[in-house]
Length: 357
Image (tube, rainbow, N blue to C red):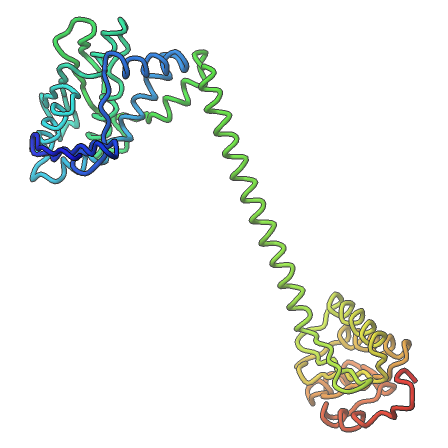
């Protein structure tokens, strides 16, 4: 069974079968202030201590103003929007709010609350902690209205102590709630709850660092795999015919690359039983003594494991450089093009003759 009514322009709906009460389409909960809410407040206060409790309530109030602010900004002026919020607060049992003054130039506001729910609960408990949650709400609202990073609501009147109402003066502050919490932690008023919060913060930081380290390791592993793939691609060893391998070279052949190339070529000669290794220099634009020495070592190593080496594709500029720097390749067979070398060595293999002979 559903029931609906409108109070102060707010649509209120009860959905009994679902156990829901909706205000303007948003779910709300009704609780007895002098028992349920008082019991909740006193339990939390005993667990965390008075200072921590006050700051936690302030933080909760500050962080709960999104809907309040949307209501305020839906009106033509701030004052009209705040008046709408006052009507809603009264209907919801948050007390009768009164906007005493707002000085936008001085960035100062004064608000009074009659029959504030926090004061009603504390009166039932016989304590006076201050209306921290409402103070936090006012801080959050006027922080946005004044356009400042943070505000602080100082309570100047206390209904629990016999004043006619709770009164708050809201001004910008150079200390955030987080700053105040950190200061509390550093003081001798620290509680087990503060230690738990600190430990939880450390735990989260450790988790975040572990996640970052894991992601970094994964990236490094990916980079290593990519580098390996690039090395393989930069010096491919291709079996173009039975017993014939080609090694096309590109770019600069330094000591590291030459060592990797030699290892891969010798391994391919042994595993494939290659009798010829064609080293093609078509992709090499320039050459120096060190590069020529690497190529010479590569040729000699291949011959030691039983493969004849042929060098092809020496460009005129490379040949001229070789002559100028005195590189002697007379002992190494050379052909003008890779195509010529392939024609020479790509011939049928006698099936009766062992492959490695």
